[in-house]
Amino acid sequence: MLVLLPPSEGKASSGRGAPLALESLSSPALTPAREAVLGELVELCAGDEEKAREVLGLSEGLRGEVAKNAELRTAGARPAGEIYTGVLYDALGLASLDTAARQRAARSLLVFSGLWGAVRVTDRIPSYRCSMGVKLPGLGALGAFWRTPMASALPEAAGDGLVLDLRSSAYATAWKPKGEVAGRTATVRVLHSQIVDGVEKRSVVSHFNKATKGRIVRSLVSEGIAPKDPAELVEALRDLGYVVEAEAPAKAGKAWALDVVVTDIH
Image (cartoon, rainbow, N blue to C red; front, side, top):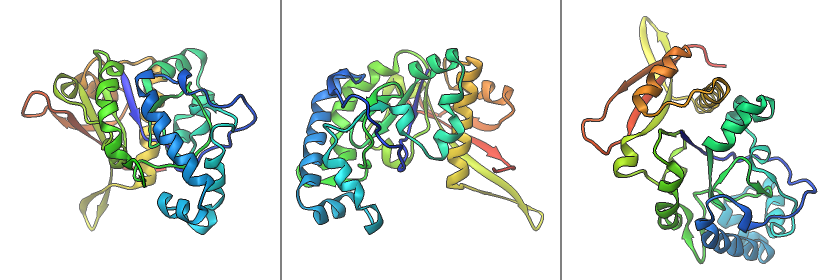
């Protein structure tokens, strides 16, 4: 099973560990593309601060992120699972998993990134600021830039099992499973169901969408559940107590779309 996750906007500090070693990151086929993005980002942020802030879409209060990016090559690095914070990662709670569950997470979780393309939670990276929606002056829109290198590297990472796609739309632009891989891919949408004037209303609530996805991943790796395909995933989630609505796609080579319906959001 391969689980595709978005990163978090908020990130923990880099700390004082050894600096980044690009060649040590997983999916080494992505190294040249990572070097290209890293090089332009560091150069941009070491130069005109106002231009960098505009390109990165940073508010005045986030001005310090520019200086942080300028030092990415020398900043301390930590496992990505410690760098990424926020709602999904709080609910996932990697640090509180037992040893076996952490090993499963290391094998199955892949975090997408505007800077790194995609990294495992054990890959050591510095804290940074560069979303997939950024358009760098030289390389252009990062979602489009990553498509070619991802098209080569990701099918291998996907192996021959289930691909559980929990990415947000911005990160889904970097790689879309195709063909046989798409047929064993499942995307998940979390819907909040509530009764209003006697009528059920459903809505997507960002905060609780992320939290529920984090809890789903935690349940799967904690229990050692590794569905082989989307149909098995549906049954596994129902066994875990989730209300899941799903239909097999009408055509082969298309991803399954699963709705997880929750009434109690917290």
